[in-house]
Amino acid sequence: MTKSGSDTFESLLSSRARVGWGVAVATPRPSMSALYEFGGGYPDPASFPYEGMIEATADMMKAEGAAAMTYGEPQGYRGLRELICHKYELFEKMKADPENIIVANGSGQALALAFGAFIDPGDVVIAEAPTFSGSLNTIRRHGPQILDVPVDDEGIVTAAVRERLEGLRRQGRRCKLIYTIVNFQNPAGPSQSLARRQELIALANEYETLILEDDAYGELRFEGETLPPLYSLDTTGRVVRAGTLSKILGAGVRLGWLCAPPEMIPAFQGFLFGGGVNPFMSRVATFFLRTEMPAHVARLIAVYRAKRDAMLRALDEVLGATDAVISRPQGGFFLWIKLPSGTSQKRLAELAIEARVQYTPGAAFYANGGGEEFIRLAFSYEPPEKCYEGARLLAKAILAARA
Ligand SMILES: Cc1ncc(COP(=O)(O)O)c(C=O)c1O
Image (spheres, rainbow, N blue to C red):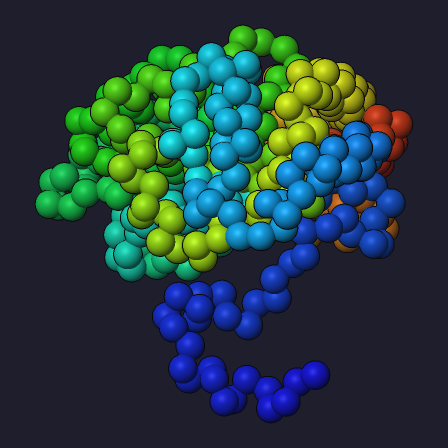
């Protein structure tokens, strides 16, 4: 029930809360009106391990009893922190200790903790253009100047990062952190090459800044070689790495984390209430994944690869003869399409509504404008047949939306 509208408090809002005030917060859930949901990065509901989670919950309650239902450790349930380290070792040969991990409410909150710890209004953040729109919303709340750098087939263009850092140095300013999505970049799809990873670390050292390495999809690699995380390449404690269980277990478990030098952890912990984030669910997830993680992730890889292939096949069939550029990510959830020349985004939006296909226009992923010639399609949510059908319909709409 609304008592009095917003008059009583609006003038009292903090400057942080004023950023984006009045803009409705979109619920991250599939559209009710779309027949083909390619908009958000929703995990595949048919792959959720329902039975396994029921068993894990019962086993956990029997084993842990009351401990599961009271306040937990401020840094998060130790069992989950151990499991995260095991996951890093298993998939990326990355070494970390539970002391390096702080559990958060999804990696969305983990990233917010990192921005909160380091960003004041007016500070400089370097971010990829395009980058994950959710992170842009969070970064903006802290009021920094966001400097764009482009992304190509090898990920973040480090030569452009150097130019930005050098430009700041000439002005007597310093970048607080470089935000980068290393694997199957959301939305553009590339994974950062080893050379770029090494260059980025060297730049962070040379210009004395931090790197916030966001990896939400790394385990979901359909092909190609796993590369060392920035966190492993770093020898001076300049990398903070964010991770999540959203894409390999379920976004509803709301479990993510930061991996950082232990001395840095209190800077994040200060933003959380002392009882730790979601100790109950942390235990359930740990009990399930402890035994099931490799087999479950292997199943997911097969599921998402089939979806990607179905969507790519449809797009190639219809748009093959145009100058559209379609990404071929080696993993993750998204395709990124440069629309054929002359396509009207406005007309495409109308035709896509008629075809009941949901997608995300490219402009959402740019901090400082641009992206009008791109769209992002998520292949993660719909089954392969619908990825194919819906992508065909959308591709035909793209042809019809050309001037
Ligand atoms: C690159 C990236 N980082 C972070 C997130 C946040 O996910 P969550 O808060 O569910 O862990 C997402 C979700 O789509 C993402 O794509």
